[in-house]
Length: 228
Image (tube, rainbow, N blue to C red; front, side, top):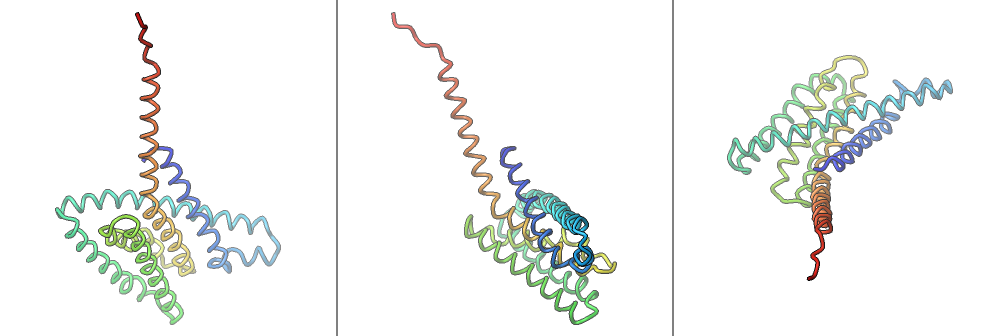
């Protein structure tokens, strides 16, 4: 990927993370952040809270982007280590099962003190899995069928790894943060997975155009042959 296209890729991912967190934060964190300044008409504090949410989302986007490029390295390493993509896909499926089991048994069940919390965690897990399946489906549809398992692994296992610090916090109001932070990770990861081929193709076109311009300049720079 060229530097110009990487910058576009980076900025768009940042904007998605910031926008998703800012908008959803108005609803999910309303009672904790926005309700009091709204009731008191303190619009400066209200806007500051929204900006803070956007900054949090951009920070989550940075984490998601680091996770994405780390996974690209791990994916290639996995193919080389297991020799074939088929075997590596089976390993990824096994890891997916382990990750989902860990979420249910060690993250959600111990923290589900009430029925409402149990339904919340069940809903979040459903959102994670459904989003992963849909993203993997379109990834396979737009590229090749062999990418489905890898895309599913990235959307479930890597997103969970990025989400893990929020899941491990035991402080008050943790449920709102667990809920909120899932969405920028899912949105940014889905964006990265689906649009990366577009940016790679655009980079190839840009390099080809650059080579053509260089060749044209060299051709124009050649001295004209005088006729005797």
